[in-house]
Structure formats: C-alpha cells, structure tokens
Length: 122
Length: 122
DNA sequence: GTAATATATGAACGCTTGCTCATATATCTC
DNA sequence: GAGATATATGAGCAAGCGTTCATATATTAC
Image 1 (cartoon, rainbow over the protein chains, first blue to last red):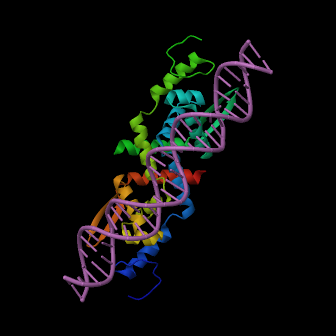
Image 2: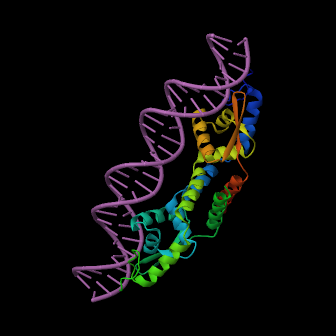
Image 3: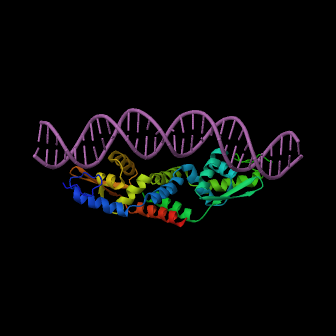
C-alpha cells in the first residue's frame, strides 16, 4: 500500500514484488550484452546461413561451389555471405577470380555444435 | 569441358569442382535439421527474449514481475512468452491469478551460456 | 581490345516480426 | 453480484529480412 520505490509492478504483494523485481533487474543481463547476444544468435537463425556454415565447416569453398552445393542462386549466397562477414563468422581470401570463404574461428563451431546438441536432445 | 554429372557449377575447373560440390553436399546438414537448428537459434535472436531468459535463469517470475523487471508492457512480454512457450524454452504454472514462468530445461541455459562466451570472446 | 567467368551489390517485393492498442478471459476481493 | 487485478490474444502497423532480378566490378582467356 505504501508508495515505495516501486517501478510499476502492481501485483497483489507490491512490496515483496518490488524487491524481487529490483533483485532481478540487478542481476539481469545489461542491454548492450543482451543485444550483442541476440545479434549473435540471429546470425545463426536462418536455414541458408546454417547450411553455409555447415558446408564451410568441412573445408573452405568459393561462392560458386557454395551456391552449387546448396542449390541456390549465386546472388542469394553472396548476400548471406555478406551478412556472415559482417558478423565476423567467416573470412575470405581472393584467388584469381575466385573468393574462398572459410569459418572465421573455431568458437563459432562450438556454438553451432551446441545448438545441434539442443536440437538432437529434444 | 566434358558435360559430366555436374550440378550447375561453372567454375573454371568444372570436374574437380563437381567432385568437391558432391562431397560437400554429402556431408551437408540435411534440410530438416538445418531448419530446426535455425529455429532454435531464432528463438534466442531477439533482445527481449534474451532478457526474459536471463531473468528466468535467476528464478521463476510471474508475467507482471517480468514486465516490471524489463520495463516493458505486459502485452509485449506475454507475446514473447507465447513464442518461448511454443519453442518449449519456458514452462509455466498457474497460481491464482498469477502465471509463473521458468526455464523449461537446463539445456537451453547451456546454449545461452555458450552464446555469451562467444560474445565475450570477441 | 572483346568475351566469358566470378563475385558483389542496389532496388524491389513479399513475408515475417515485434510492438501497441483494444479487448477477452479468469481469478480474487468486496 | 460488481469491480479490480493478472494474463492472453487478435488486429494493425512499421520495421526488418531473404529472395530475385538487373547490373556493376574484377579477373582471365582470347
């Protein structure tokens, strides 16, 4: 009933609730970290990108090989590679007219595998 | 130069390329698994959902407490909880007018933490 | 030089997503 | 019963996303 330092919780037990809310807020992931984390997962949230990473986990591949392997247009693959590059999940090297892409680090493979475990675990 | 069993790769070395493509295709994640995996990551690809899961990793919370903790509308939180419920990432129990949500299993926490490691690792 | 190949990218379009707002349902208090 | 509280949900809308198509750039072959 007393006004208190409550934020906006209107649950029946406002006092206790306020304390729980404040404690939760204190331990909550900060906004920046939450956004970064969401961004990381978002990079892996599309089937095409997942398949690209799956292909690259075997060996480096040029754009055309990726397109042929996934049976998708070169343009679609290039656009997705752009996204993956922005996220620093892949690196590339040029060789003549070809551009070979590879996974940027093994850490993303760990995350990838971790997701796979979850899928198989269900 | 020979037509071969090539799929659609037109790289200069079409033969070798075809072999690499076929080998890549063979080891590639199948479509269903790729989609499931993408779906799993997509569930974690939004800052609001990340923050909800972060809050629930501390303790179970009712909708209103979540809304207050994240300083978001009850409706927005409810909609996201619906999504998380669909993905079986949270479970809930009713107690009077309240509905308390909690993480559904520890496995999602592993994946969550794995993503955090990646973010901090960068 | 021209032609072909390999890749990147901008525009457009349809689909999805995350929010708000209004409202429905359920429970509790009186 | 009426009114307040807690949650869920449908409609609507603006923003984002993933593709295609057309085109630009770069390299190689001739």
